[in-house]
Image (cartoon, rainbow, N blue to C red):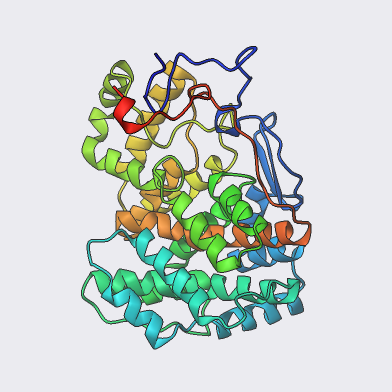
Length: 390
């Protein structure tokens, strides 16, 4: 008799099982001019520029302009871009009230997801997806997301909101909105570097999510909200939080080597290592590790970097698995003074630039993304009356 289970693992499609690319691994589903991850050379380029060169030589605003406009700005173009971005930083009293009313124990990613959704409710141009309007909306998201994150940061600590300033860079302004002061220039630079490295990374899970939503001709706020939902997961953006929780669990750098050996023996999943695309190391890691060390030197605390080095050595020696960007970013943010559950919202601050670039690219040459699946449930069967079912 035919099984009534929802899924029958014994059912095999005829004439044979299809070759499914689980997780779309290795599947090329579209073209893009935004960025390229080259697994053979472990390189990452934004619009043709190596990300490590951008991190060393540019501010985050320049990289945002690059992702939106296909090239780095001139002095005049950057000044105009910054003037517009800074004019959009304020958020409405209603938006502030929504953020403040959220449960204090809710994750900050839930707060920023709700905040972005509310921004969409406030924008009367919600169905205008013209290139000019989407570009303006992208800059609004770039400007307002840091303000919403900082507001949530303050409210969760029972502190008053600090309004954004228009005479500070994005990184300086964010520190000031969170802590009421701007830290040493080395710390601001390290933070800016992290935003540049997190800004874009090809068709990752959250970016693909934003393109799927955009392909339905939905709006940029809905696509960004969906991207935040995808980024929240610990297998994607939330990994930087898990890295720091792991380091706090280890506590002592002298115990790090044995901890990792025990974790590998127990087949425990260790966050911050490995990557779907990179096989010989994440190209962003050397730059972020350099600035994590800068943070350790500035704050005078070498504990986390000693732990970092010990954990990395065991994993590479034993498994030939290398760190990804989340591994150095976690301790770097922690040394900057941010609460762990705000690491991923900071990721959102950066990645909104990449998301917007892909949203605009998808909208410019759109076709709804609608893949197929291979059904492996029960074969077709007839519905029997309730009285005949046993």
